[in-house]
Image (cartoon, rainbow, N blue to C red; front, side, top):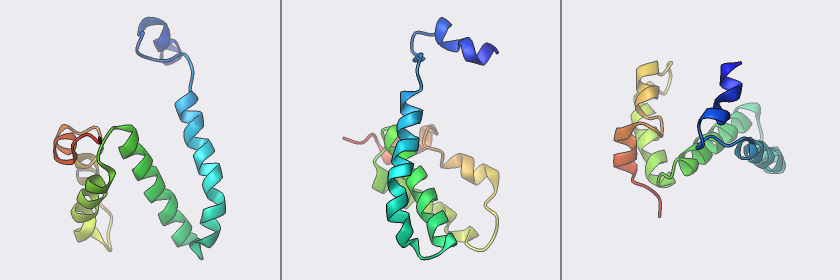
Length: 105
């Protein structure tokens, strides 16, 4: 219950969830494009890439630099599970990532 009242104490937390709703609307719009994924794996890859791209953009990162960095760090785990510490090291709010990928212009 305390989490539901955060916006009352913190003026930086909006009292609405418009940005979350907007993210879902863009997913719904993308369904038409995902018809051309040709397989479940292709559709899954498109949704993951879309989510990563939108999160990086929302965090103000240069999306192309961020995608390149993520792909390079994940390359060696191509056929296995990526360790959680490696995943955490490339999250867009990580200070190192923000420094390496710079803020988008």
